[in-house]
Length: 434
Image (tube, rainbow, N blue to C red):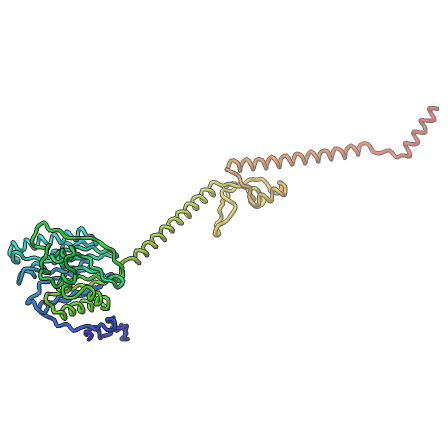
């Protein structure tokens, strides 16, 4: 039978039906849970995690000694020991201390230290009359940050990870029966019903030198983390926990279904379950930031290259000179004879009286394109060479003109004698000679 919140559809801002809330897979209906004494429920979500928690007194015990913490990024389950008005005090002290001292990042060393602080707080509480001497509790804690999860653990509460549909137990029970299992003397199924299954070999509240197991593992989007007291793990097998965890659509459905399953099997102990779904492991964000960093790095490199080219081009232009045409005369220019985006890359530095028409046609054409020189001094030298060339050409032209004039005058002073007259003179000379 479905719970009330799973029978309702979410509506959007304009009143149209949105997608219905996720439900369990077919064949796995939600059982009805009757709220018992000491039952507590919590759920929440942020941009990276979605979680739910439920604790129930069970069907046998008269009070609930379990406590839980669901305060992202830290989640914990603590199972109290010591009888009425003591176990619940120990677990409450432990959870409050862990909440106060848990690290904000997934640091298993600091998370383990917070559990050890909780141990000291429970011992001090018993000494100051806050509880009873001999009270104690377990503590299984996780802290999830993006794709990392820190784990700290003491006692026989457990932490599981559901990854790709397979459930893996991450913690090792600090119990007498677990030692028997490790030694190969009994099986895990036998440990669940062993007469000494309640004997804990390490817990908070008894030994000031107690230490917590701690480690860090990788998690990814789609993973489901499950914390529970032995009120769940002692009632149903891990295979059944896996089946329920896989088939439950949401963390809330998962904790409800798991608690209900423990109650259906007898509910001999208090049962507490916390389920956390990793909805965003930060990998996409890391890739986005890495892409943006690479993009900006490449952009900065390109900008640097462009700036270097601009500086180099500016220096080149500033150190460039050429001699070119300025209307009908020759002038000296600073820069290069070109334009960029409508802006001239040159400036008129000095005009001269050298006329273009006084220079050869080929040189005039070169000057219109600009004759590049290495410096302003070379530009002046080039102008002077043009003056010298023009002067030389003028002198040569004058010399040619003078020679031409002299030849004309000589021809005018000595006119040619007609042939007939010269022949007559020759004949007279011949007769006289005779």
